Amino acid sequence: MADVIVIGSGVTGLTSAVRLVEAGHQVSVWTRDPLGATTSAVAGGLWWPYRIEPADRVSAWSLRGLEVFRDLAARPDETGVRLVTGTEAGTGFADVGPWAREVDGLREARTDELRGADEHGLRATVPLVDVPAHLTYLSRRLEAAGGRIERREAGSLMEADAPVVVNCSGLGARRLVGDTTVRPVRGQLVVVENPGVEEWYVAAKWAEADTTYLLPQPYGLVLGGTAEEDSWDLAPDPAVAAAVVERCARYVPEVAHAEVLAHKVGLRPARPSVRLEVEPAPDGRRIVHNYGHGGAGVTVAWGCADEVAELVGD
Image (cartoon, rainbow, N blue to C red):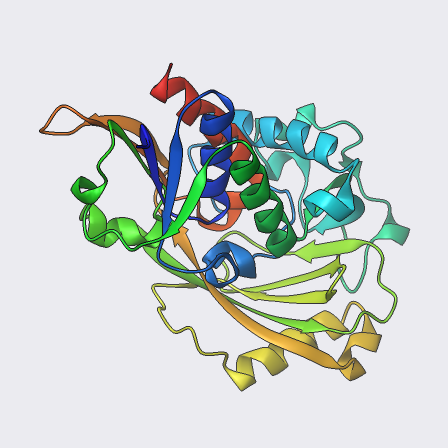
């Protein structure tokens, strides 16, 4: 019998489960979808706090994630984590949170490091995570420590027969706990054959629906993207895909003619602020909520998992 059941097998759920099982708990993860079908599997995988609040807690979570990923990057083939240099265009120190001053090597970009019409930006070497590979790594690490992953959809949190239930259900929190403040932010991206891009490049503004990023992953060059609020459509839109490629080609002209390998759509589970707290259940059990990470789930996963482990205790 598990003493902790984690609902959700995205990066948030699996990372929380790993932390808990390695702390000595008997852990079972319930997942409706296979790992490759989770929202996390569609993520671009760049470590960077993006569209997530509250700023003070996000900084601590993000920096903890940066610390863990730097260690995991020593084994990229196993963990899916690499350290890659790149540019966050259109952004300065005044535009980011307090975490920025704690990132070694983060600096203003030089003119020759900017692309297109961008006039300023930040440069850094940060983790770039091959998220499907990282999910596989997390699942293997969990099972090696004695945890289990079950293909099972929870109709309610009360179905989970364990003293502690960790709710990492993302958008599923709308149904499981009636939290209508969790909303989808639709992201569509295109994966193309990499024409030789080695650095990541992002030009995204917080409030805009159209974003631009190029992320070199082992499986291809990820081109993005969109941030469409309240859209539940999981079908790739050919017109949107064409617009994504066109925007990215303004920065790297070669991508206009690169072979398209895949079209992907994911729904980021956005919320006014992350919900990470304990809620006592009517029957005396404890519910630990850990959801609402929007587009920064990969960035904050390890920091949030550490806090989950503290809340669960021994």
